[in-house]
Length: 196
Image (cartoon, rainbow, N blue to C red; front, side, top):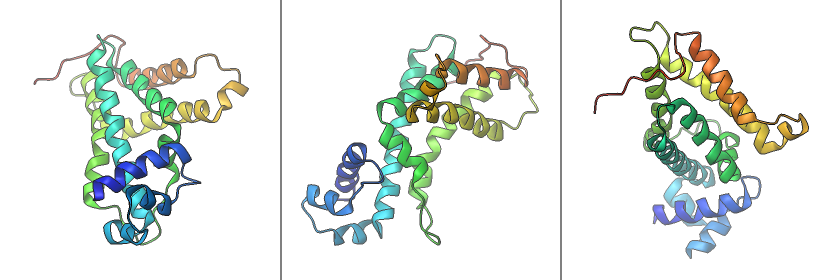
């Protein structure tokens, strides 16, 4: 039943966005009372958190698919996958960053694990292109680079880059990522395949 609520909630969030999200509407779509949400997720916030965790999994799958199709430039594929999810599903992408859990409410461990997959993909790819023995803190660098790409992507989704007349925001984001990686010894085209 949890999976059904998450599935229908995901569809509703994609259509309505976070501002117009309704637990009552999700319950109606599933065919149960709104009180069922409290029984299953603790609150509507718990349901939204679970929906966002599903979005993370879908997004991670998009990244994997883009990288599977990439030739040598897996960093470009990562940036492309980031933009692809945001542009194809702007309401779901925005909800990930806009939703805040109420004070005192923690994200369940299951949701933390489901979300960590996306970050792990980015960290693994960055680690693979940096020189062996790099002194870079890959975890912190990955977070920072995600923030760089996120900022560019946010401007695309909001329409701000159109107002700024930026012709290639995705290309600009990729250039900033490459510049940051270059500061740690990366050269475009460098890639060490990971052992399988």
